[in-house]
Length: 68
Image 1 (cartoon, helix red, strand yellow):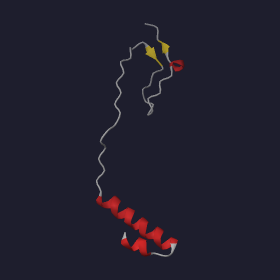
Image 2 (cartoon, helix red, strand yellow; image 1 turned 135 degrees about the vertical axis):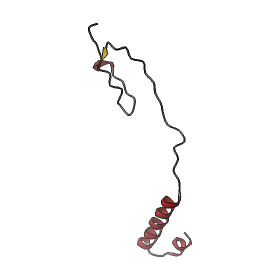
Image 3 (cartoon, helix red, strand yellow; image 1 turned 180 degrees about the horizontal axis):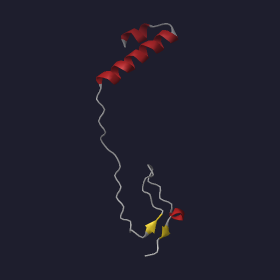
Image 4 (cartoon, helix red, strand yellow; image 1 turned 180 degrees about the vertical axis):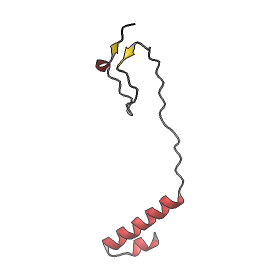
């Protein structure tokens, strides 16, 4: 990092920062601290509900009642 402050060429500085970021990625551990969990109770006669949308968007226009 000290070398980046001394670099006079923008391309050289970018290369040094890229190298530093790669080393940081290599040395760092990434641990997810928080993530969303959604639970749904859906009756078996409700059709059209997939529950697979990663953004948890549920559109009722796609749902229907199965004859039971």
